[in-house]
Length: 209
Figure (cartoon, one colour):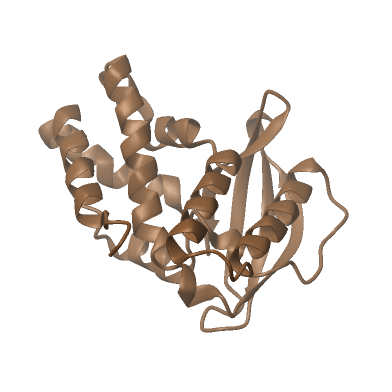
């Protein structure tokens, strides 16, 4: 579980939760509200990263809080599980959202420092079905120079939220969907939740570590 080559490629190319922290955009179209939110988030993340008064733990906590505001993790969870979402009870659905979000934070949050010398260029946006919008960005500099990172966004209660990250054509949601489908098919919802709990326990570190 979580070991497919495509997913590892995604992890190497960018921090899925915090790709926006690479740097301020070099240039951008005037665009709409969705594109503007991506630009705004980049600036907010930079403020956190450049604040030398913050400890590493506080910096990560602030970044995770910002991610909670910008990502719609419940919609992402529904998209990841697809038809299997309805196989979970209401309590299991709530737990899956929490555990899946924590897994992403653990797995990708630890990679933050690898990307602090790179920059991001916001290159435009594209309308999608269901009223969604994809904001297109490109990594500039570093070992991933030229990599394309697109953010699928959906409007909820007049607010745009990120529901998927597509890195060089590889969708984070689609990758997890394939992996979780296998676990759900073989072992069921309880086993999937159990595996996520185990992964999160392994990834948790004491605050004073």
